[in-house]
Image (tube, rainbow, N blue to C red):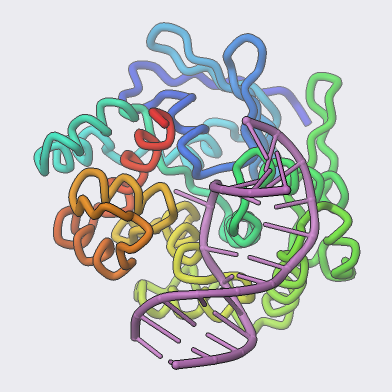
Length: 290
DNA sequence: GTCCAGGGAATCA
DNA sequence: TGATTCCATGGA
């Protein structure tokens, strides 16, 4: 593969730290020079930001780095308009948007997002990243870039013969069986990912996702929001989102007593069809300030 | 030793 | 339907 380079200038709503550390992705790592290197599909890319330039360097399968970048980073979408709309809601939103002003929601592969968020259940981000890295190294394809080896996220086909025990050895814990079952459900076409990708009915897609082993309401919503499904109206509720929603709006003494339905209704009412983006600003802000 | 992490599934009321 | 409990693992 040939090395490619691509530069985007004067890009608004684009900050590497905000994009890669807001919790949506697990395969981008900060380098010593402050740039980030990551892998998606069969692309290995390093990104750095200097002044008003974003510099992408790496190798792609298609040989068209610019096209891959524009797809993956959702470059055509107007995040400035989204932020203006959300910022009008209240001062809380204004504050969290100001904090995460460079967030963009990546177009991540559906299959990879499903498996990644099954792994995320009752887990922490460093450990999730470690598990995904080990799975990729064990079963993905090697891509060399600048003397270093990177590994693609394995396809369902590449995980076909992996046993529950082998998953367990990679440190998956109790999620091993879920990964095994979901992999085989998809291989057996009990859930057809291409059909999901084409289905405009979010509730139908959500129910299909919920039929997968290890996919409950929160994981399903993360898949809907963070993958190429791109459903901005969903509102994934985890411990951090419950915390920030209670702190800002509900104000119960014990946040663990607040029902998911109450949070969901409030989110729909306040944020409407941009609830998912609002969630991401709130999540990132609340998690970073501690 | 104890608690917690971007929860889900089984079980029980 | 709604609430409890268990589930591996590793870091704080």
